Image 1 (cartoon, one colour):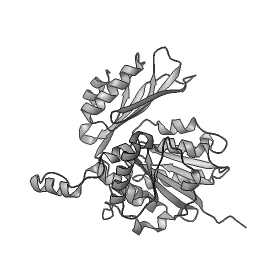
Image 2 (image 1 turned 60 degrees about the vertical axis):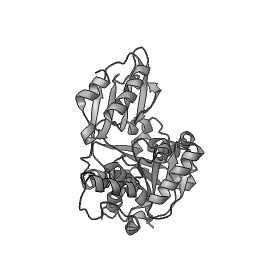
Image 3 (image 1 turned 90 degrees about the horizontal axis):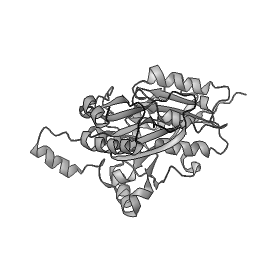
Length: 344
C-alpha cells in the first residue's frame, strides 16, 4: 500500500534579524532522527543564510536537502519558484520526514500558506505549523507595536501620515498567521523587556498564542514540530492586512550588494556598519568578509546598529571575496552614501 500521509512543513517567519537561521541550525542539530529538508528564501541577490545552514549539514539534513530561493520574495514567486522547489524536495531519493521553510524577513506568510492548496502539492504536503520569531528587545521598545490612539492623533494633525508603516504591517501579519511566537534574544531583553514584549504581542495578536522566550535558538524541537495545525485549511483564523488585495508588492524595501575587497581592520568595519545603520536608517546587513592576513572568512550580521561578527570557517579553495547585503526601506537606499559610509 502506498504511504498516503502528507509531509509536514514548518514555516518559520519573523522580521529581519530575528534569529530564524539560528533556530533552524538548532533544529537541524536536534532532529531526533528525522530526515529534514530546508528551503531558505532571502531578500537580495547574495545568499548568506543558506550558506550558513549548509555548513551545518549532516546525515539527517545533507547539503543537497538545503535549497535557496534568492532575490525574490517567496510569497510573490509561488508558481515560478516555490512549487517547483517543493516538488524537487519531495522527489529526493530519500524523501524528507519534515521540511523547514525560512521565509525572508519581508515575506507575508498568508500568501505562502495559500500556495499549499495548489493541485500539484496539496495531496502530498501540509503546513504543520507557523512559527513567528520576534526580537524581544525590539518589541519591548515598541518598534513594531504602534499605539493606535497616538497614531490616530498624529493622523488628525498630519493627514499625510500613514496609519500603518510597512514594517508594522509585516510584523502584524506574521503574528496573525502564527501558531507559536518565539521571543528571541531573551537574554538581552531581560525579565522586564520580556514582560513588555509579551504584553505587546498579546495585544497585537488576533487570538491567544503561546509566547515563549528563546536564547540562541535553543528550544525543545518537540514544542515546534508535530503541531498538526493544517494551517492551509485554517486561513480564515489567520487575518492579514492584505486579505482584500489580489496581490502585493515589496517596493517599500530594497537591497544593495556591496563589494569591499580585503578588509584591513574588522573592528573598524563593524563600527562603520553600526554608524551607517544609524545615519542611513539601515535595517539589516549580512555577508562574508575577507580580512587581510586571516585565513578564515568573517561572517557579519547586523540588525540596525547591533553588529555581530565571527570567523566561521577557512576560505580554503573558495574565492576570497568581501560582499555585504544591505537592506532598508526603499527611500533609505542611497547607494553612494552607503558606499561612502563603508569606505568603498
